[in-house]
Image (cartoon, rainbow, N blue to C red):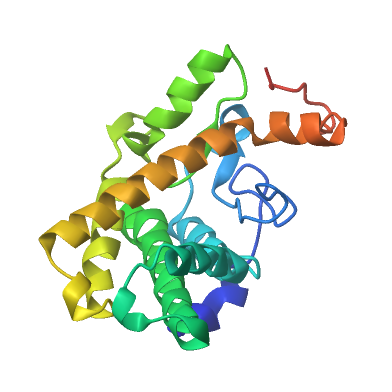
Length: 225
């Protein structure tokens, strides 16, 4: 609730620091953590990191995103003791929203601030398809430190580990434990890996779907492959 109340104070969007609310994956999913690598500011502040996490967590479209994952969970009958119908869906929605919020705040703000790591996805936008896929897929393991060096992405692994452990606070008793926690952690890492690949190619996908070339910023050439 404190994070939600503070969201307007962290809504500033600056070129080279974070994406904008117009740049959404498939015109829906928040994409604030993505910036072009060659246009990115090399170092961002703690305020910037919190801004990315809060915008990703409380963007208006974060709610239907949680509803989408809650619907999948209900169709797969995850957490069967919660049942079906509106009550079961409501419980799954709150759990999905809590999962994505804790994941965002921990992996994009808390861990990056403490460890001096960059939580953003720095879109490559050039090279062969294979090179770009490999680059995007490995970003869950490799990130940029505040000193500009390549580092193991402890923020990604640690932040999502906290989310997986914290989910035991609201999951049904029969769906808690080491195995369930490890599975949730692994699934989230896999989702984030696929998300990075979509973030890398989203301008290209959008260009194919709309038939329109993305406008480059004045005075700058496009870096897309």
